[in-house]
Length: 291
Length: 269
Image (cartoon, rainbow over all chains, first blue to last red; front, side, top):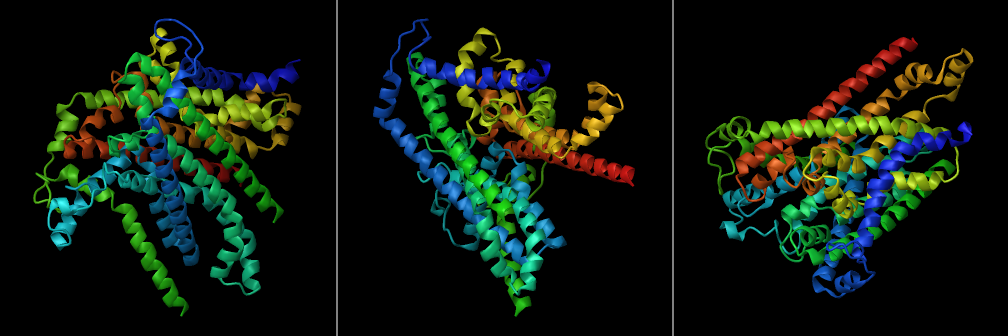
């Protein structure tokens, strides 16, 4: 009996906390979005909140904006990460590239909220870059500097994510790179392959699954992030997380089911992306093993 | 030909390095500069006004640092206590429902915790966990626990089961086996997990604000009014303080791990 239940007993404390707090919270949220346990203590099943959300222009605008920004940020971070990894690989492993690697990891240490602030100080109209372009003579006034912060194109948000997430994607790929290099680079060189060819022919195909799955993780993260768009976003349309937060805490009590319905949609989308990322990562692992 | 090729790579990477470091420059300048306004890009004079404000005049700063540390350390301790047995079980045993349990435990990595906390809000109010540091600690467990679990699972994965069996044959009980064999081996995993947990916990703004309602003051909460359209010099000092906490954390962990492996290596010889 003890032998059989031991694995479960050891997991129980963690499972209990995540189960009640996380999944309990998600389920409670769904129930409240469906009209149960409303503020007056009444419960009646209704899908009104979802209907209202889907018909509301604010929500669809938010959804489109959030998807767009998450897509652009994750793809650009992924591309930049591959470019950097390739450059570092071409330079080979030495003391200098080890330092480069460390420096490229630095943004990961900065909390998101601070990262957003750094980008703001650098890019706002009265910011540092604007001062430099004025000094050099590229811009003639403060207003001539392009709007990057709190702008309709969410450029500031995208820049923050690229700065923060490129190092993350690189970090996910580094371990595979070193494993491949250890076992295959010398053999390839014996057969006359140059570093460039080795990267394109051997390394790149092997890191694709991990690369894609880490881009998906970045997508899921940026899609549901709150801090960066809260600080750098426009007033309209808002990111989904900001939209739902505003509705829950600043709206009327009757808006709360809608906020929780938006949350649930957000949770479902991220969960699906997470499942996809997991599948891809697993595929990458078996691919590498087969080699 | 070959040398020349490398030269261009160095130039490109140098430019990209600068681009990555660029955002730090205005933060440092803003925190020290006197009357730093557009179109200045180098300060005319240096002042410690913002540092003075943050560390002498604003009494909230110390409360914020203290709260941030109390929350982060409590979360680390709770995470370690509940994750060590769970990670052991997940690595060592095969059992029914393992895949689903793993999916449940790792879900908070990808599904944002605030969606759950907002659903829980009504319950938190009833248990008076809102506007309380305990509620914030509880909420911070969600985004951190999966990382602690992952770090510990990696550590357990490299622990040879034969070592424990040998100890068992020699008559040692489960507790002494854990203290003398497992614990020394998974120590680097605990340290790595603790460092990640600490980093994630101190970075939280939204969860802390949701649960704490602005009453539980942490560094990110104190900092926010200054960075959203407030005094840039003060905002920058908070930004520096915030980042330095994260960097100190990393250096400390690096030192600890290096010391650990040196000692181990020595023992084996």
